[in-house]
Every structure is written in structure tokens, then in C-alpha cells.
Length: 218
Image (tube, rainbow, N blue to C red; front, top):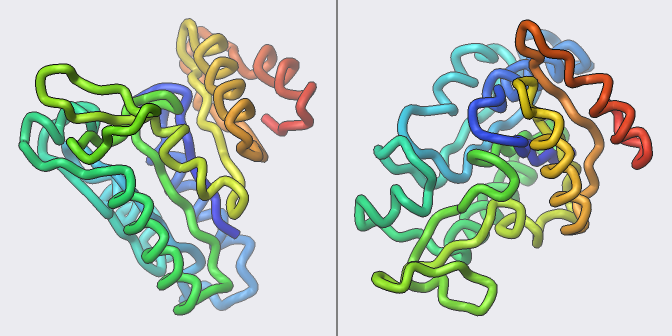
């Protein structure tokens, strides 16, 4: 089974929960504990390395970990690509992800695959002058266009479920429910919502009450 991990916002704990989900796969595996139990993919990375974090905290359970495109600038992919003059088009991302998935399924097809997106559901993906269709948002000066993370991965939505990482901070109920609606309106199958609640706030109950209308576990 392949899962897309989307966030309701940036810095809501996608990498922490990704590592936890991969470790949980190890606990559910029928294999000996010495055998890895999941693959991890980070298509777009800006600044730092979520791959390294997940590998460090789920070392025994990871079979492989891949970062497909990365920039040094710690900002959104569309800005990082422009600042570093390293464009990556939507076609390049989807092609690289397709080939990576195909290779993993051929190699160890029984293992689940966890794909961690960047930022929030409607955060920009990478930009490129080749992203010049009507669906792209474009900078008038450079002509480099981009689309949202939620739109970028739509072509894969029939092959994978979504785990939405909610926002446990003040204002996080609205951010989480807006992200949920954005995913559902794009045809994604959201199988669950996970959030790390911050001290002093309790967003889970409201999110659970709302998501239960769609039979989504929180």
C-alpha cells in the first residue's frame, strides 16, 4: 500500500509522524524484526533533510529512503528553485516519482511506501519556465510557473490513500479542515487525520466531529 502524507501547514510534524508510521509498520510486519518494513520518499526538499531525520528515527524499519529533488534554501520549493536557478517542472517531478515507485514495487512490492509532501496541501510545489499551462500560477517577471502540492500529485490519487497531518496549534482547526476540504475536492481518498496537539490546545475533538461526516478516522 502506498500513502501520501500531506500537512495542514508547514511545521506540523510530518517527518516526526512519517518516522512513527514507518516504525509502526515494523510492529505490524509478519517478517522477522531484522527485516525492513517500509520505503520512504520525499519528492521535494528545501533546506535540511527530512530523509535523514526519518532514517535516523526509523533506522531498523526503513528498506530505502529517497529524496528526488532538493534545494539548499530553507523556503518553499517554488522560491528555492528561482533563487538557486534550478528549475524543476511538474512533469519532471511526476516522472521521477513514477519511476521511483515502479522500481520499489518491482524490488520489494510487499512493503508499504510512505511519500512525504512539502509544506501544506496548498503550498507551492517547484517552479520552472516549463510550467506554463493555464493551471499554473506564474511570476510575470521570470515566467516560472508552479502549482500547489495538492494539484501536483493528483494523477497518483487513484493508487494511494492520504494521511493528513493536522495542525494542533491555535487556529489549527480551520487550517486542518480547510486542508481536508481541499484534498476531498481534488478527489483524494483521505483515510485518516493525525495531529500532534500543542500544550494548552485541544483541536482533536472538533476535527474528529467534522471529519466523522466523511467517515475519516482522527
